[in-house]
Length: 121
Image (cartoon, rainbow, N blue to C red; front, side):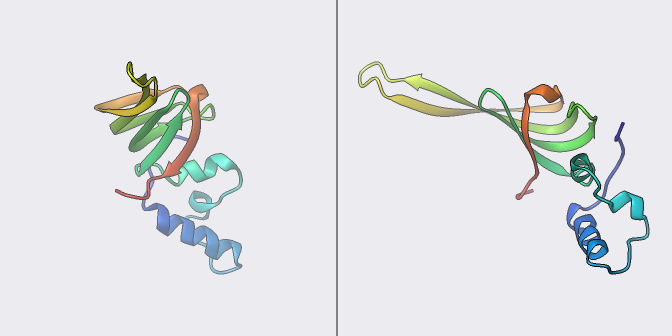
């Protein structure tokens, strides 16, 4: 399992870039080495991440833990669900975003389609 704690994503990514460019390796070389795709997620531990799910759902929250199946535990989560409604008069589709907040959320990995460090904190 790849559960643990992390620091600032930008600092760790800069260390990885420096290491790949042949510069001095970071003090904890194993902590910043990117050898497989899940290593990029490891760099986002304890940081805010954006997660897109199947079914028009999006999550933004702090990544506390994950595993090789992309099961995740997120904290301080804001969930946005895009709902499609049809106007009774014009029969046009109307997209509405419904948002709710949760203290903690377990996300099953098979519904995850994208994980990204959040651009806005």
